[in-house]
Length: 118
Image (cartoon, rainbow, N blue to C red; front, side, top):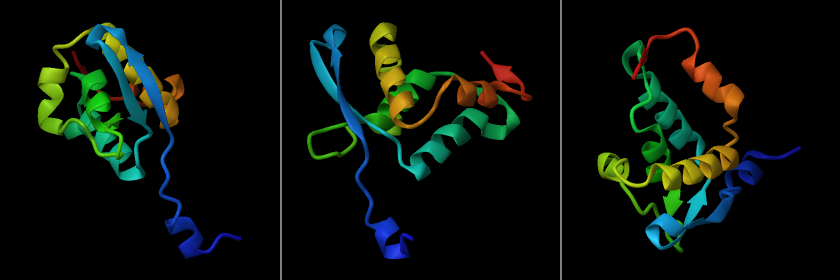
């Protein structure tokens, strides 16, 4: 059995290089931590109303990292990031979802039983 120390030292997060020709290069996308995923889901569920505004840009901002694993964007960058190519954001969104274990089933559960804005 794993001990507490065994578990807490497992801080390696899966990542993948994603080509983004629309931006003239590539980015590194990494899986979300548990805390990041909770925050992402809470942002979608804010106030009991589901808000999918800029869902792709929000996940991209959380998931795009530099060579040292530091986030490239802050949450303040979401609106600006959302103004970029939808095709590019969708590609990053797909990789970030897969790396973080978010499938269509999980997205469907996020949409279920609450009002959706937009």
